[in-house]
Length: 249
Image (cartoon, rainbow, N blue to C red):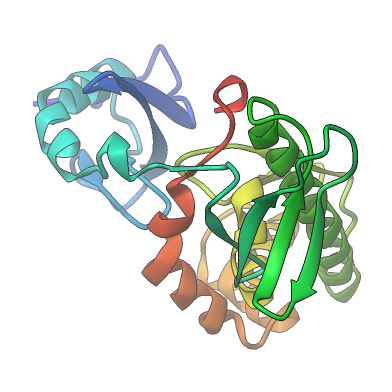
């Protein structure tokens, strides 16, 4: 049983737990409608839901009791996808073969060939993951900046800053001041999915909640929002399996 006494520690937005030797990020959400703690596994990753006035210490104890349940349902580490030459990786929803150029210098380039789209990557094998990652982030930042400004203009709000993160449990977050963080993996999804997340986060500048008014705001700037939302629900875990180089994970 947990206490509904006034909290002395506010819950974090994300907490971490070590499971089978892997650090797992778990998103934390406070819900006015929740009557008890709930641990779930949506497409974006593990989610711990708390009643509005529950103590964080009780939430941590609940999470600890259910660590085996969570570990049994998370994708195993062997399912993680690494950025390296020789793989196929989706870019804007289209599979590209990653091919090492054999040259130490040069830029990562996406090219169309007779055998399909190819991502040419220079550098030695040790540096190629970082080169691929940096290129994907630059592409993601370009697309997300563009779509964020597009939806901000439609909704009459101002986006202050767009940044990229490597979260394992969420696609984006937005502050009331217009600072938006996005997950770099969105560049792997089809463009309409990235567009949906951009519309979602920009709409939070208008409504800092997930009320019916918020969803109406998303739909106002993106009438086709259900398409991207459904894609993420069906395929989000596949995107989350792609891992940034170790120093950025």
